[in-house]
Image 1 (spheres, rainbow, N blue to C red):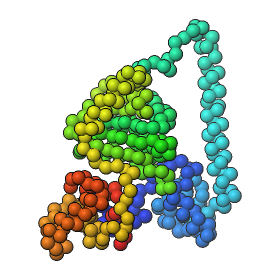
Image 2 (image 1 turned 45 degrees about the vertical axis):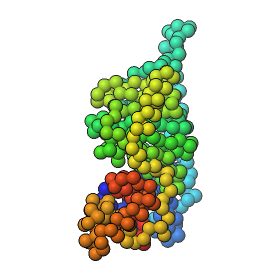
Image 3 (image 1 turned 45 degrees about the horizontal axis):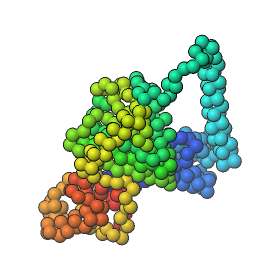
Image 4 (image 1 turned 90 degrees about the horizontal axis):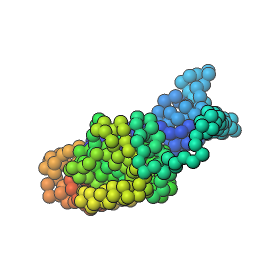
Length: 336
């Protein structure tokens, strides 16, 4: 896992998309700076393009190379109006849907079975599958269990590309446990949520052989593929079926190799020396101990002592895991 060549400054970090009304940390800092300085250079918002999307910054009509801040007393009502407009549109859709169902309700028999309690529901199509998974995630508050074998032809069911959904689950105290094959473990990781929001407790373990995709929400709802390409999925609500799948997951979990826990505290800055940071970077680039020793003009034994200390600090049990944990720990993002 290659690291940025110079420690990964703010301009090198990818901006995570979010709702217009949710200011990310970079957006808050730049908007405050724009209010203090009365304007910003156009290239200053590379870390926070959301400021332009939300209208908090706008081009200067006299000089398009500069951006002017929208006054807070103007911006806040405008953003609130956007939220209220979306709520009104949803209410309108609900009203139209209720009106459309009026003739159907007159045709329906007096007593109908409760389809919401059906133990097995067939979901066909990506849109319907994602809608059902998103709803199950929104209703969950305890734990999500997942199997992600890493098949590139099978779409992800969890919304890893929408980190705010995962962050909302984390704020409710939820945690994520994922089983993956070693070569696809990185693809099983949710994107980082916005700075300032609680980190989702996430643990990944690996097994060489795994069954197809599986998602279990609060041990009450499960999703399993019905066809090889994942285009049809079974939504299971039977306590017996979901309990059986959860038990099978627990057995595989105990047999799997831990990769990392995302809520493990990062090592303090003073615990890692500058030499160890250099060694850590070279480890993530795939260099052997001998190559590192040659480049740093030290003996191999000394390099191995530093590597052992890094492994101890990060809780690594293998060299592959160590390289991964170094990348996740933030050590390479810190300037000595």
